[in-house]
Length: 396
Ligand code: NAD
Ligand code: UDP
Image (cartoon, rainbow, N blue to C red; front, side):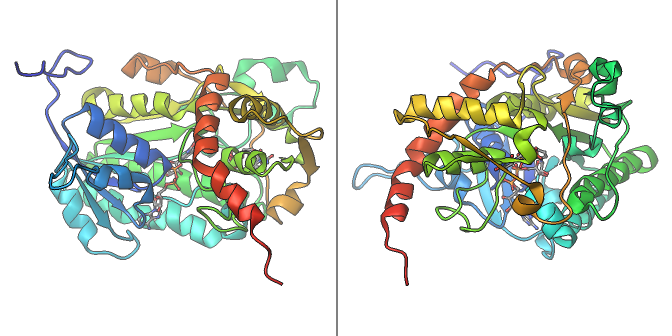
């Protein structure tokens, strides 16, 4: 019996499409590829300079001797190793596709103030041809921006104990009304947010003036397995990934978690698998997603970075069976940790009205549950390798 046709939110059958996914080999791309292969009939042209995180989807599964095993999605994912900075094959891939999803970016805060030129080029200049090829060839574009385009909250400029700080309009971030508030130019932290804001404006203008069909996604701290790297294991020893990987690294190495400027900044964390559901709804509900900017986050999972460190310490102790350190955290200054020019977003609560209305999406997973599955993965994937690396004698 043939499988029942998949329907969109308006009851129309979803037709198979070809998706050019740029940055498919990264954290979000790898989860999106997995979802598209496992649950949809769509084809992915996966573009990236790296493929390690999607290797399990590309390589044939192991088979008994003399037999050839195949994935159920065999033939629906092709990897194209190319750097979008300088590769003429990009336009051809976009032309062959019904939809382009652009995830490629430098997006780790440690780079924003130390490599501001690379950050601006990656997030603005390198995205320009992608927008142009989509516009010129009448192709739909889903572009990944960031919640960081909101910058600081209005409330953060009020005195510390001012009662208005508790009013939602002073901190909840809304796609269509909140301003974008960045620090001064020498605070190079904002190079990323500013480049992302300008590419959003350009895409919006292409929509308004030339009819580009676009959707812009603003992720609010999506976290889960395969995020970034563990320094010295699958990334550079001196590298500084995002907070989930920094804290995982500290826990795996039994060292205190470093709280930048006391860990007072607040974040809302959403489980990658919940967030990917939202992206799939955008992909398959073209009319409902076109022309919109969507916050994608979990307003119920808000913590300070200090609280995040405390919860991760408890969860890691549960999943590894190891007792927490007596002094589980250590305060460090942002200058010491990130260098000159760092600054921070104080608080990030996404307003969910637009995504709720257009796509009926809501996040499901609590912070504890998402950390439990993620840290189980981190422990299973890295604990042995860390033990081996720590046992190695240091060269004199
Ligand atoms: P990631 O670094 O894991 O993935 C980005 C991928 O793009 C990497 O695999 C990288 O190799 C690839 N890439 C970069 N430059 C390229 C180039 N010139 N040519 C080809 N490939 C290139 O990051 P991610 O967390 O998966 O983020 C994806 C997107 O979402 C980014 O645009 C990021 O700014 C945005 N975002 C993510 C989060 C989050 O919570 N993860 C938050 C805000 C914004
Ligand atoms: N942070 C921290 N210790 C670390 C890494 C990050 O205290 O080891 C803080 C960082 O200063 C920021 C928050 O954690 O306030 C989130 O950082 P992340 O790198 O995940 O990115 P952001 O949310 O700022 O984009």
